[in-house]
Image (cartoon, rainbow over all chains, first blue to last red; front, side, top):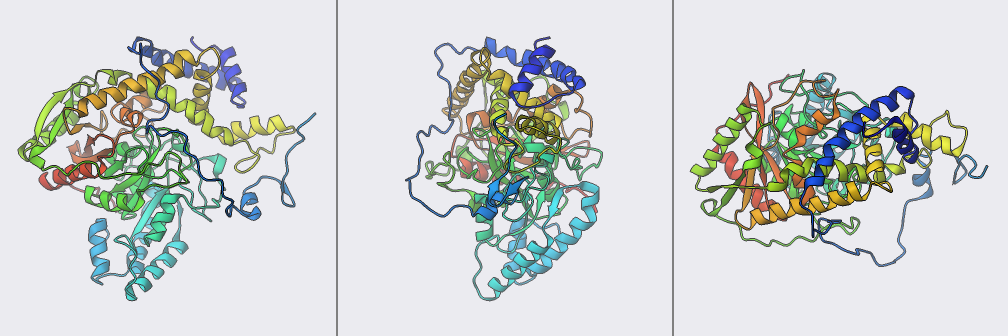
Length: 95
Length: 479
């Protein structure tokens, strides 16, 4: 198995996803199958080929730093799970 | 009345044969009747649509028509932010999310006077090829309710095919406009990367996503494309397009047929229909030439490394803090992240996030992600080389017609393989259009035209020529 259950646990931890034991087992099988398939890229002739990071060839696109109207506080908070006044409310950051 | 193309409906509105309110009422009635069977819509915007229709009729009375699509009922995929409406990306994560702004394409539709009639169903976060991963249940294919409409823009495709709207917008990252268009017997255009602003499209894979029209005809696709295309400074990957190539006469057009696209894996009925269609174009005067895209065998692997990495990055924002699903079972901050994401995301979303996390992690990134970025360059080179000799490429959209619901859901890789002909196009950032060309066992088949970057309009011309030359095709008969 290319991706052991331990590795699945590690990846899920990095991705901030909690998995049940049965899920870990299933993902180990699925992900291994996919990783085995995509390993065929090893054979692709990429010596002296540069990576493509941006298909349109655009670089360093920025806007002028002008202050303009943005979202109102009401709009920003309209979907928030928990708030207090005009603040996002979250669990404590430091234990 | 409901089997109108956009062009025909626009004519009727112009000639006063019908009002936008009557038209909209008819489509709303048809949605009410058919949506329980087809499940094309997540949200129907009845009130907003009737208001927009009324405003359109008023404008028309005062000679202030905004565009050719003023008053036309159009559906949009539910990953497009529309202010004040639920925009869910078909996920539990955004089940009750109300967008606070309009996507650029939505603003453009509104400025053109379109009547946005509803938000359509899709695979969750645009991940899938059948609309079966939607949190709101699958959409059914109007041609055969036991079959998938394709994905991820399955809701939009089904809505157009079943006359539950006149036209729709979809999004395409690896074939998600073209394949459902093909499965539902309608036209679907994926523009050149950068031609249509992605601002307000809930990002799946930022270097691959594009929004495009899904319509009954290529002519309709061009009308809608005209409205939504254009440079947008809010999208840093948006390009300024200038007409670079003169329009060619049909007899001066050279078409390339990639031998790799007609090899094993292609259903023999589909192959026959596509070959007959190529003959039709040959009779119109085009020159047909066999070409090779030697690295196309790597396209699927390349895509399934690059796309999940971008997905993992784009979906990191869903953490239960600012918006979206937030778990009530969390006692600490870190639990908020873990539980919200575990409870809010579906299986396919989790699978791709983990795949992308793995292939971009330390120790693996060089072997997988960096390598895939180089293979992407190879795939682009193949196309560039081909287009130095021919004008357009033609091939199948999908190896088979629409498959049955549940047929490919047990093995992810089987599902991924259904995108084999569409994926390379997104990797290379090229335009491609899916055009219906025949039937196989009463199910629609489409051919795919691929063009060089920024040849969108010329490609639409070729598609229109083909539509004019081929026999008329039946429509989905659902009532």
